[in-house]
Length: 159
Ligand SMILES: CC(C)(COP(=O)(O)OP(=O)(O)OC[C@H]1O[C@@H](n2cnc3c(N)ncnc32)[C@H](O)[C@@H]1OP(=O)(O)O)[C@@H](O)C(=O)NCCC(=O)NCCS
Image (cartoon, rainbow, N blue to C red; front, side):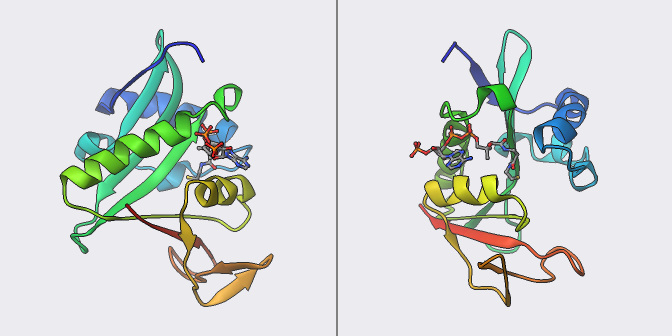
């Protein structure tokens, strides 16, 4: 893998990230879930991976304000040409370190049941899937987690 750098996000990264999302999510448009506010008030717990100004990956996460033992990963994306090279794992490792510094021992995240890639990645990273209140494609889901008729697979990892 060529050299790349990891740094915290800046407000100026927002457009760059938003402009790749449809492509990186294989045609799904999830931009409405990633407001610019995350790039203003969650910079210390969010990361950009780049090589010579090319955006390779990003992670947007935060410390839960509701549960002081939880860090939440809201979005992670890696450029399709740079996947399966350990960048996603490295981003999670950076976020886990941040969580430990903030005395957070539980990491949570979620994904749509259609996102098999994300489910495989999280399972490989050691996350357990929460039981939820439904099953889709054999996968436990929480039916109305982020809205009505928007079932999610909920991930949980103790670090
Ligand atoms: C999910 C995603 C972030 C993974 O990034 P990545 O850089 O390819 O992941 P890594 O190379 O660090 O892989 C970490 C582990 O997950 C495994 N993994 C990654 N992609 C996988 C896949 N498609 N199927 C099975 N396992 C996978 C790797 O084999 C690796 O395991 P190992 O270290 O034990 O060998 C990337 O595929 C992506 O951006 N997908 C589109 C956006 C998305 O769905 N994001 C998640 C929901 S917000």
